[in-house]
Length: 159
Image 1 (cartoon, rainbow, N blue to C red):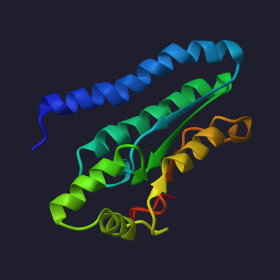
Image 2 (image 1 turned 120 degrees about the vertical axis):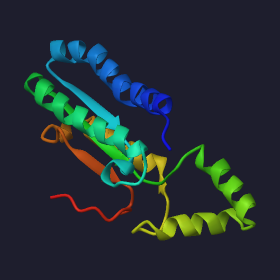
Image 3 (image 1 turned 180 degrees about the horizontal axis):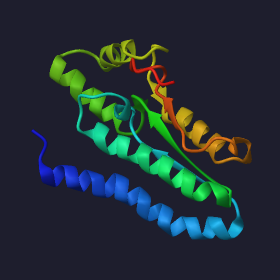
């Protein structure tokens, strides 16, 4: 049921948008001999079932390609896969879902958390902590990687 126009807009925003940002920032990082690029691509990249997985998988491929190209210049490029994350948008979405289902917001969140290994919804600050680490000098040996930060959500295994 995916519409071509929607898919193209999605790819233009997420994949090409990230590429455009990298093109703009990379020359400055190259001149400095150091830099960090951290892309965010949803956990849907690791499973089938949603069309958004395609754009997220494309971001991972872009990340790996850029890491090889920019690595010799001291620039690392990584992707973070957030899973279900508590953000400013999740509260209203859970309220709407609770109203449709005739249950409390707490019940909606409990059901959502059941699919997460840590049995709670990840907070956006936890994603930010990982971004800060990857952007730091301490992460200089990590590049071209896709790191899940979804609290153990999903059943895919990556070796």
